[in-house]
Amino acid sequence: MEILLIDGQPYSVTNTCTFDSIVHIICTSYIDSSSYSTWMSLNNHYSFFALIEKLIRGGINTQTYRKRANILKNVMADYKIPKNFGGIMVLDASCTAHYLLKKLFQNYPSLQEQKKCGKCNYDETISHPIINAHLPTENLNFMLDILKSSYEENKVICTKCKQTLTKTVIAGEHLIIEPIQPMSIKKFNNDVSVKLNEIPIVLHIFGKIYFLRGLICFIAPPSMLKDAIGHYVSFNWRDTDNNWERYDDLLNSVRNVRPSTVIHNCQFIIYTL
Ligand SMILES: [Zn+2]
Image (cartoon, rainbow, N blue to C red; front, side):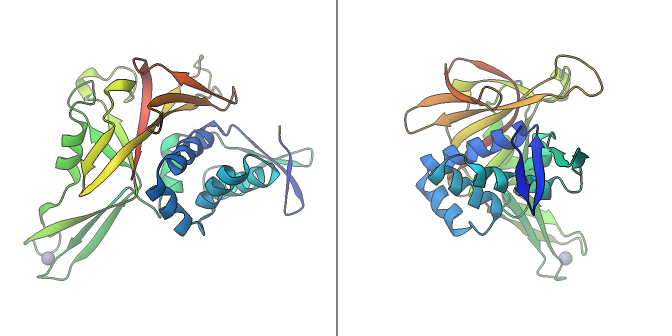
């Protein structure tokens, strides 16, 4: 357990696998995409992006542990508070990837839908840190079509004056996609099983070209005990050397994975410019 001093107070953060899996994909995206890293550098006043840059430039050290603890302290604030264990403040950072991605990217969403009515001046912007793909089949064959039909620009009815208006879509530098299985084949949960080499590598959508960066997957706890918690790992597609890597913070290692591997409980697929 890493103990840090935050504002003079001994502090420790546990169960950081959700956060670490997200960080790992964003780090490899930063390394592999010059347009994504340029954009992130322009926005490094945001502490999460500053952490990514620090990790890439200097690796893991006390300073990055402290930054991570500070970020988690803030994003977890309305969900969990640290507990005092013999003078050490311990923050349990276990939470779902859904919770954390929504929090971390709330100001840098995947997509914004803008509805502006020229007739009554009604103006509404919906921000989506995460976008949903309600898949019609068990695989990702229709993911692109589904995203297009759910979010692309189209005519909608004004909520206020009931006239037609054009909804505009502003897509971000990343797309965080939550694939959702059809109701008919849902077994225990919504999570999708995917074969790594069947995931689209490039997405032409919202007038931009996005490249696959990785998946965030959940490993369910072995028991149904109330306090049992699951584990998150990430699978990162490295387009610079056409290779899949699995990152697991418990093993503290990166391993190569065969592209024919089927991944269960895939919760998020991440693309960036
Ligand atoms: Zn209107």
